[in-house]
Image (cartoon, rainbow, N blue to C red; front, top):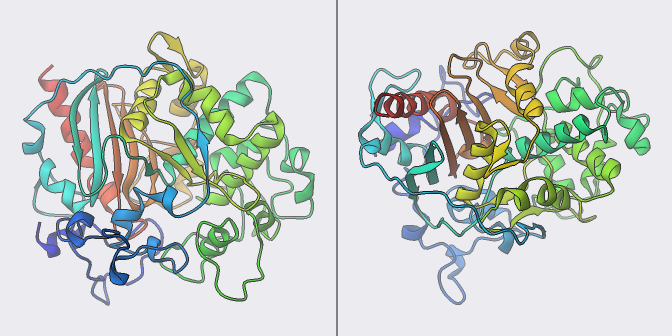
Amino acid sequence: MPVAAALFLVTGGLIAPPFSAQTAAPPAFLSGHDSNPVTLGWMVGSPPPADKLVRFSDSSWFRFPQTRWSFSHIRQLMPTSTVSRGDRPATTLPLAARADIDAIVFQPVGRAGTMTWAESLDANYTDGILILHRGRIVYERYLGVLTADQPHIAMSVTKSFIGTVAAMLVAEGTLDERATVTRYLPELEGSALADATVRQLLDMTTALDYTENYADPKSPAWDYSRAGGFLARPPGYQGPETFLDYLKTLTKSKPHGDGFAYKTVNTETLGAIMRRASGKSLSALLSERILSRLGMEHDGFFTVDSSSAEFAGAGLNLTLRDMARFGEMMRLDGRYDGRQIVPKAVVDDIRQNGDRAQFAKAGMKSRPGWSYRNKWWAHNNPHGVFQAIGIHGQTVYVDPAAEMVVARFASQPLAVNPSFDATLPAFAAVAGHLMASR
């Protein structure tokens, strides 16, 4: 795909972009095709040449185009904790491949011309994408270095796993959604989070003086990542040493509960509460509640900080098929392979009980009428679509009406960009195609 066409899909964002579309040109990136990590030869050789090394220590792992290799090799870069799949036999994902999907045409939001599904793969810097229809694989592609057996970082799709398990703990009474943070984490007394409730953490309605502008090197999001060891610390670093220590530094901008505001530290706090309330690590909770019961093919893993606390906001790594299994289970109201994995009431709550008025206060114009509940994004459209979304292109897209799930891993150059929303019509076009031909 021409670089100019690809640039349309990787600039701007839901959070402030690094340029003004009216006053300056967007940054230039290699296209999806030209940034293929196999072609570029990252980490090839024994040892690799100096100009082909990808390291954690110099943060090159988090720079594009190196990310096209590193997002599929996180375990070689930082400490992790295994999320066991258990000893249950892997459930079958029947193959019913369709050759007609690549030619499906859609019109990206904000663009006059059309694009085919096949063209969108490079435009979105896709590492892997899988479509399930009625539980069968109708489309599966791997690009670059990703394979069916290779885990990829899920980024904020992690939040939807965490939110689902947290909602299960609420439903069974292990967590009280009305309780404040300090009931579970008394060490946060005096912090901005002290009087936030578990429900406000789940639905991102806290009022923290914290922003996630990934284009701003001074954004608190980077301090948070360094505290948790997800990014390298500069020489002489004297800041917080763990995620929990970072949470203690947060301040409040106004009373909690007045409007949706996407802040990953909410999920980090929720993860700490889940560990404290259950007496188990997040790795153990996800293994017991999700992975071991779904019959996944491979273990997952979390990145962890220096206290071995999992990165609850973005650190989960899974294979593509296993992420699709999770989406299929949610499509089936929490039931999979003859077992009720997640209570139907929890799935119904995610799909039906998000507060649209609270969400609207965030001003996300590309997502009119949406809501956010238990770390899932609900479109509130006629198909009942709900979605897990992570930066750089990760997603689990669930369309109950079309009986379709799309799981995608990607390594887009910018953290948050319009390819999520600009190419949502691609998912809708595939759903319409599948419904028309069934």
